[in-house]
Length: 358
Image 1 (tube, rainbow, N blue to C red):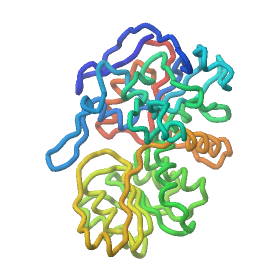
Image 2: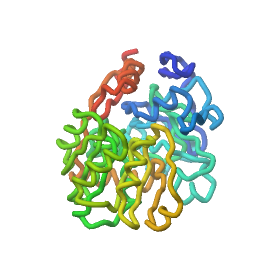
Image 3: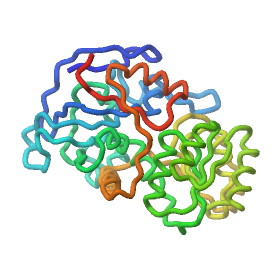
Image 4: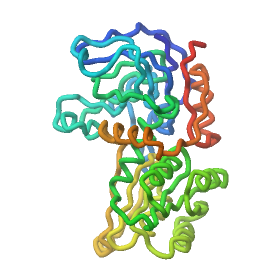
């Protein structure tokens, strides 16, 4: 197999040749056909997360080792089944989207199909080789969802940006359809969140972003209101409240930076929920008495689980889920696409295609 891998953090990806893995036990070998390039790949490429206050979280200390083929928004065609994977509903030659947020497979979380809560996660493209490659191993057949009826380039994005926003939205629901939900960030995650909310029948979606082009994309995707997210958090909060007409029940932060978190918690009504999703980095300080008096909920939402991926793919097949903007590039352009993403030059999602041109 061939792959474009991180060999050294912060350095260009390198093309590597490795033995094609042989599936064992319940494993399934797929030939990768599509793989999305996600903002999380930038943090993996950099090797750390910004925790704020001058602190960082080293991914090496979290079990990430190099060289690594990144890529967790994977669609592939089944090539071979491990002996224990046969008869489990997966067919050789068929195309599937791969659930990448896999765990140990044995703990209570994994057995409940809440793999993303496994304390020993071994995610594809993070801890194991992912989709910036010609082949990938899925640990179990249950991690594969048929792409029938869905554009495969789009289906790959549902394995991360799709289920990430779907799971975050589930954490603030149910809400009346005309209750404003505020989304911070109108990149790939933000546009996916707008699409999911519209598919679920929500009528009031407020998108906040610093970039005019991304606000325009959010409006085109179906946001009812857009707000300029530039400037200090107090000013941003004031602009949002002017649009919403008062404090809101839910703010979903798809950026995950200190300023967006401060604005997101400031705009909540009593009993409102702020959900942190993005991993841009930073920290916030919350006055504990006011947190109690306002009965606010501040929580994180980390990707999603296989059940949510199946539900989201069903929603996509129903025709209710409007596709987000997706452009395709050859797998050989992986490093160039990652650079463009780091520079903020991508609206929507770019998906790498394995067309055999290395």
